[in-house]
Length: 402
Image: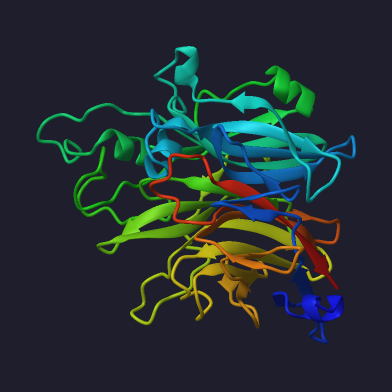
């Protein structure tokens, strides 16, 4: 196929820019260097591991000019529960590095595990650590992550007496942060691990099967039951740090919702607001369901943007995939001219388009102006829930902006 024609067929995102004359920022997803082998992708543009599941990844360019990746991983095999349970019970955070932003990341070591492995089963992050988000602020690195522990079997007659291990751990998720000076320090354990979460839920509103519910009549906040999937950005207007998170609502069925917490320092303390962010409504007035937001600030456009997973296609008024939203202040969010970012598919350099079942936990590498240059996303070719074979991976998709 003619190269120019091929590029013209790739997905394009149009984001409105600020200013007297409205222009558009065009972001084009480029093909990746990989090939389909059985039920997974392999190649320089993919990070996978035959012995472990690989999931969400976050990348930052270091002072050494190399690209440093932190990602979720955990063992696979018949002795481990299927993916839908194992990520909650066994997830760890691993470190990989590359000389390139979009390919050839090499595993170095696992840098963070649940503290129960070291004998501390009482810690807030004893059971699992998951969904890392790494940032560089003012010359220091910050690893934001999700942690949880099992609060134990609940007493007979309590609202949580029938909640199993998997869901007790799920309902106990909080966000933590580790500050470190270099990736060498991170690998060598030269950092202070927090004894308390950075952010915890303020409300626990659910009709039944809930551990430690709030008192009857409590109004659910955005940080309800859980706080997970952190994304942090600094707001230039006042220097505040904004921490975005997901919580759970039940209307009466489950729905993922999002909130934001503010702080004067990237290490906190963060104070959650009552605002529901990424507030796109269904026809019945309920919030459209999404998750895994990554938020960044575009210095030229003077706007915040977010890419997130759209479960049903109701955010984009299209089909499930990845959506884009925008904001002037980081609190009030609206759809841009074209909110649909990417279908659940990956385009290979050889010309094939691979439809995938899961395209989740999107994270961008951003240049100095705020242009996304690489998308890192957790992926599975076939349905992930019952997998035990570790055939999940992170795919690194180069982006072109103009």
